[in-house]
Picture 1 (tube, rainbow, N blue to C red):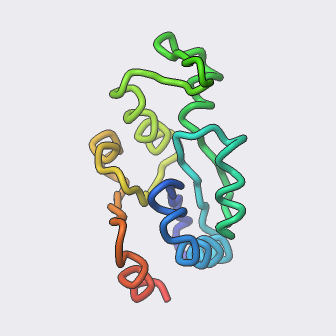
Picture 2 (cartoon, helix red, strand yellow):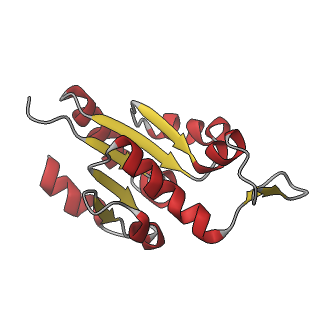
Length: 141
């Protein structure tokens, strides 16, 4: 095997939009010895079921909300519905910080706002809402 890669997958707009594609891709990557990181804003407790239902395999799971709760981020607040909020720049930077810490090589996301916070060494791939499965299917399978 060549270099082990660390690949990040967002849930909403990526896994949820193309479950079959990312199920197939995650299984192939893990079978070849790579790491697949689920990287999402939603708490793991509620988000993990979406990943399981999509049939996506993963080696690591990172939640922006869980990270800020665990680290007692000073600007973190919770509304009366139980949703957590933090400054927009802090929110977007959290995925990039995680990518930097773990040495993420490739990340799939449907929100370009995150990309400016990722390290230059990480290839970020924008996932559009339509026809991405046809494009990526030809690349990997």
